Amino acid sequence: MTWYYAYEQDPSDVGARNAGGKARADICAILAGMGMRALDVPVIANRDQGGARAKLAAHHAMAGRWQEAVSGLAEGDGLIVQLPAVGHTLFFGRVIKALRRRRIPLILLVHDLDTLRLALRQEASLGERTRIQREEATAFSYAAATIVHNRHMAKAIHEALGYPMERMVSLELFDYLAPGFAPDERQMPERDTVVVAGNLTAQKAGYLYELPDDVRFDLFGLGLEEGRVGANVAYHGSFEADVLPAQLGGRYGLVWDGPSAVTCTDAYGEYLRINNPHKTSLYLASGLPVVVWDQAAIADVVRERGVGVCVASLDELAERLAAVSESEYRQMRERACHVGAELRDGAFTKRAVARAIDGANQWG
Image (cartoon, rainbow, N blue to C red; front, side, top):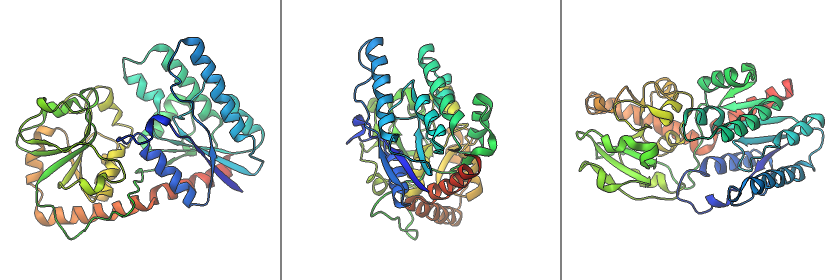
C-alpha cells in the first residue's frame, strides 16, 4: 500500500516570520521521511479578494485542483490531509467522496478545528461558520481515521460532528523540527526569565499588557505594542521558526492566551481547553520547561511528563516559580530536553500516524 500526503503551500506563508506554516511543513517533512509521497495541491493565492461570485469561482477552481491531484491515486493507495485544508473549498466533499468510492482511505490530521474555534469568536460571520462546518463535517464523514490533539479535542469532535471516538488517535504534542539545534541539558539558564513567543497582537495576547511586575519576561514575535508593556518586559524581535529555538534563553516558556493575565478567557483562552498550542512544542524543543494554564488541555501532558508548572493565574506566577528548587528545576529541564529531542525527531507524529494507518486499515 502506498501512502500519500497532500502538500499545500500557502503563498502568504513563504518567508513569513510566524509559525503559521511551520507545523504543516514539519508534518510534511516527517511524512516524507517515513517514505510517503507528496501529492502536490497548488493553492490559489489571494482567493478571498473580490465579491461573492469571484469567491464561489475560486471554490470551484480549488475543487478542480484537488480532483486533478488525486486523479492519479489508485485502489490500495491512502491519503493524509491536514485540516483545515489550506486549499479549502465548499466542494471538498465531492473529492473525498470519490476517494471512498475508489477504496482509497483518508486520514485527517487536525491542526485546528474551525467548527469549534470560530464558534467561540464573535467576529466570524454566519456564512463563514456555515461554510466551515459543512466542509469539516463532510471531511470527517469520509475519514477512515483522524489524528487529533488530545482526548479533550476528541470528545469535542464527537459531540459536535458525531465522529466515532474509536477512530481518533491523540497526537499528544506537535513535533518541532529544528535542524542543527540541540540544547545542552547540563547548562542551566542564568536568568530567571519567562519567555513568550508567537503572536503578540493585543487581539490574541492582550494579557501581555497585564503581566505581573514581579517576574521578568522575554518576548519574541510580531504584533507587540512595545509602549504598553512594563519595564520588566524585554522585546527581542522576531525570528524564522527554524532558528527561533537558538534564541530562547529563559528558564520557562509561557503558554497563555486571551485578554487577561488573571485567567485564560475569551475565545482564544477558551480554545486552550481542547487544543495543543504549537508554542508548547517550540519551548520543549528548545529545552525549556513550560508554564501553562491549569485548565488547558496541554496541562495533562505537562503533569504526566513533569515538564513544567501549571498555574491558575499569572498573578501567582512569581510565588509558584520561587517554590521550585534548583534540583527540581534541573530535573524538570532534563525531562523537557528529553521530550524536546523526541519533538525534533518527529517521534510524536510517527507514532500517531502509525496508529492511524492501523486504524484506517481496520475501519476504512
